[in-house]
Image 1 (tube, rainbow, N blue to C red):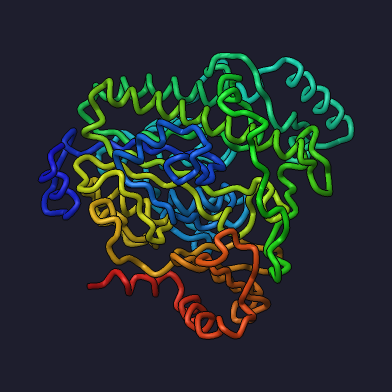
Image 2: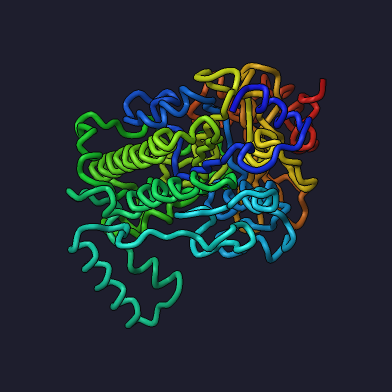
Length: 487
């Protein structure tokens, strides 16, 4: 696709039909924090993600709307923030509260695209028939665990849990296997390898059609358990894997700030309470890095197929991790908070004919921005309900002025924490859900001096003017950030 056509599409200056519209390859990665080479982590082996970023734009300051799977993915797919979808947990389907909302893949489907998915796009057992042209595609003959002894262990635990009367999620939590697995098996033995193979096959089929496609490919790793073929574990020397540099809670943090790492504690070999040993922490980090490299290889297979099928020049690629993850930082594991490590996640766009490639963007952007961006790049109209802003201008000018902050949130029982992140600071206001104007606590982290967020400095006198400015921005909310986009 030539640059003129892409410009016409982006500006909406004409209707382009059929195969002339760009395809969309929409890649989701679960629990991927931005600890990859192209985001500055040279110790992580991620050549395919690095190549994607080199040919497009990596957004270093991208944030999900809530750092847990279902709310994050729901916001991204609908273009609505959690307070609009009413999805703040893992048990609510967005159609229960916004039944008529048009999702991103549904919008492409309604505009002549063949919309298909495989792997994890929505959370868990949730899906949305209206979003797709066909039922979700599923690989066969693969699983999350490869070693027979681990599958036998889980079967025994499941049998015992059933005998105790456990059902549903309680049964699932009581039947978990080890938190890591290293097996000398082909990639396709695991679910993600099988998804990659299915994606390659599906691209071959979709590429022959006259109809443009929107293909969503969801990978499960590096979500727990960190299970990967041995060759990816072998990329890392265990003796050189460093532990978290700040294994302690932030000084002066609000009592709502961190979770209890409950997600990881249901896995075999993980203590139910208390700190993890250095040996366990190092093994988990090793497993996480191996899982990232495994996913990198899976993504590489799909991108190689796009090249081989001569589809790359007419396909927009977007890759995102649904939220970040803690690996022992702040004396915690997993996500479930507003800390920068949890809300900041990789986002990479590559569009045919984009003006600037390989230059990372540091502007604050949000996952609700993905929906309008893809619409603009494909020349589709923007649905009126969208609560994000297209970042398409940043693909050509990564350093141009942009909106002032990205907004995230996380609930703690009857309390909700609202965070805004600029280029230099994160400011959080904790309020009562029933009385949103009743402030219970505030936090300020100065990333210019404290990038790891080790101290809440909101009470220091020298920060009082900044706190006043950021609190005003908090009160204006996400709509107020759009002022910076007006010229």
